[in-house]
Length: 408
Image (cartoon, rainbow, N blue to C red; front, side, top):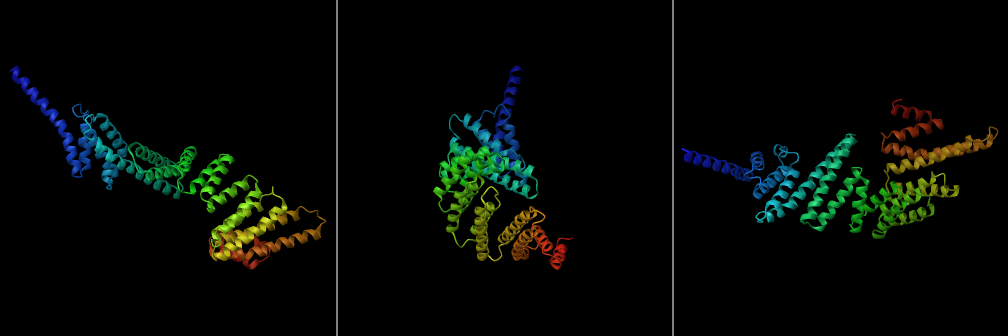
């Protein structure tokens, strides 16, 4: 009886061991037939059983199954595990550790770029969710989604570097990492990644603009100028870099440098209305900079008008150019009236002279703002500006109409 009992126990134990190993085979078969839910159940059992937990095959199959769960186009399968990519990555690492005979190593290495790509597309999905949250005005959720975007891109980059990928794939991923870091509010990481891209001479001029402005926001104008200048050295005719360099000069009070760069900007493309609009706004900033000498501001005023007019000539329905042209005259009128209001009460003639000058500025602004209103009838800022002008110039019929449009 004892021998029989031992034999029965031996057979029973053997059957249990075979049954557990059979879970690995079942997982493989379910996976091969596209039944990811059943494959997951089987492989999960295999990875917690002492008979199969130490087998490289178990973890290799687990990596394959979880990778396909993460990449599945079917929501029912994709939702089986929200951390499927992480578990696939961990499973492959465990398989490589256990695979002393190198039975699965080559196959795993072939799958690593697919895993990296899966992380990259996971990041792209989070990026889209962040954009959707921004459109809905939910900046808190957007920032979290952008952080997940960054985490996924960083993981893809880590895999590409560790297991090999084309240099173009790695640098492209690094570029998206820098962008995601900026959106997530991690400016230090953004600077690190952008600097690496600059060192690798990545052919994207926008990285110099972003890097320069990140340093500018930190108050590090020396590095901001360094990267704007380096960007223009590598992309001499890039208007975006040039205009951002001009804005730095304006912010630091280096007006002479700004003006010389503006002249260069004008020569880059005389058929692009956006260029002349950008030039106009840059000169406009000089006009409103009270730290500048009066003659410099007056010269900038005339050049801003010329640039806006050139933009309008090139694009007849350019709302922003019409609005800014009107606004620059309105602002000039306000400056003149402020000067008039500071006069002594007895200086009546001088006051009237200044008031007439201010009113002429408003009259000059009127057709530009009216055209802007015609192009975009729903813009409130334009309507409010027209209301103020109609009131000042006692154009009561027009005032009545614009009040009606404003719902007043």
